[in-house]
Length: 490
Ligand code: GLU
Image 1 (tube, rainbow, N blue to C red):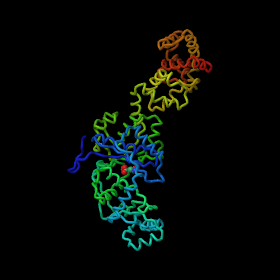
Image 2 (cartoon, rainbow, N blue to C red; image 1 turned 45 degrees about the vertical axis):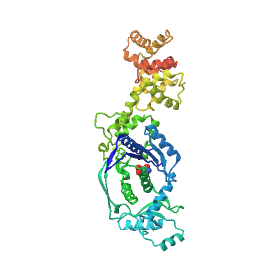
Image 3 (tube, rainbow, N blue to C red; image 1 turned 90 degrees about the horizontal axis):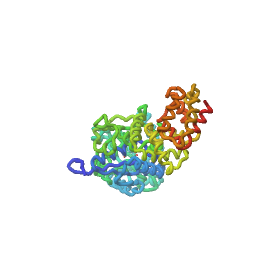
Image 4 (cartoon, helix red, strand yellow; image 1 turned 180 degrees about the vertical axis):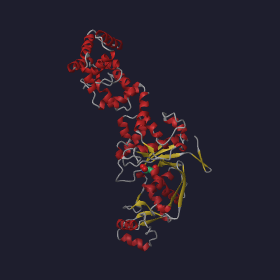
């Protein structure tokens, strides 16, 4: 086990991914998971999964399920967890009590209406909206009076305006934040029937990161302001502040943060479209990190783990590039062993409603997979590409229809049909011989014969190897049928 030296203490690297189950596993969270995983593996450390489900209204068990499945599918195996924050409320309440006891936090009874009025006045004075810390020093009498009114307090953590919070970010270098820009004393527990309220994100994260002995907090750049607040909490708890690495956001084409409005953003959608986990993870790694060897862009997670470090992570946002993702994914599909590719494709064919027996037709399916494999970008593409091999009739596209109107086309089809009569079974050599024979007999160019037979058999003039396609159709008893149907249209 390799260790990282921090100050004089040697500690084992412990990192975490902490998704909130308020939606399906997002590509941004998944990419953060990948960076955490790589960093942990690079240092022989531990990767922990924590589910941040304290927001009862927005958290859903089906999202937790989606997150766990997505991380597992991507190969982001965790060493500890999943740890659910909702089961640790007691710990957060104890921490709140400690902060209250030590005078770092206080009960605040300011009502929504008062907060609204405060905000409006600040906006009118062209000031940034913030809490004015008015209940910081309530007398016990005043507090009792609010309680008697039935007001439920929030718990606020004191933030001294004159502080500057500075840390050495592993990606961004020195980051400094003025405490006066943090919006005043921060709410760490929302008002609730519980006397210590309902613990909120910044508090729970810090309590957990301390409790789980997290050494490096690696998360999206959108959490920078939270980091400033969280450092103050670490100090109040007298705990060691971990290292921070804020990774660049994933951006859409317009350079804005990739969001649901950009369409596909959740890992389960990418999976459904037929991206392979290895291809997607490889691409996500490249979103923000660059390999020391710029010519090498296809690598396994283990290979990246050997090289991974934050000195090669960009500060600038990373644009999501579908073409690049498609290219990376196609590399994985093209090198996939045919048996594995067939296993991957079977569910897509089944979902498309194609009828076949996955056991008895196994060798036919493998031949089909090896025929279309080199043209696949995503597994989903196989549905359209293989339709002609599963369905009885085929609709001719425009080019194929016009090919079959060409002089000589119907003669070609007739001649092939008649040649086929002397074959019980058909080998690749037989099919090639038939093409040669018809070309010669009809005194046509080979291209015309090939195009016409392809048009009749597959409904298109372009596509994968003609002879292989023909044999696949023949195995389903479809070749003569197609030739006859085409003849009726030519
Ligand atoms: N629950 C937070 C999120 O999903 C985690 C942020 C963090 O890593 O601290 O954004």
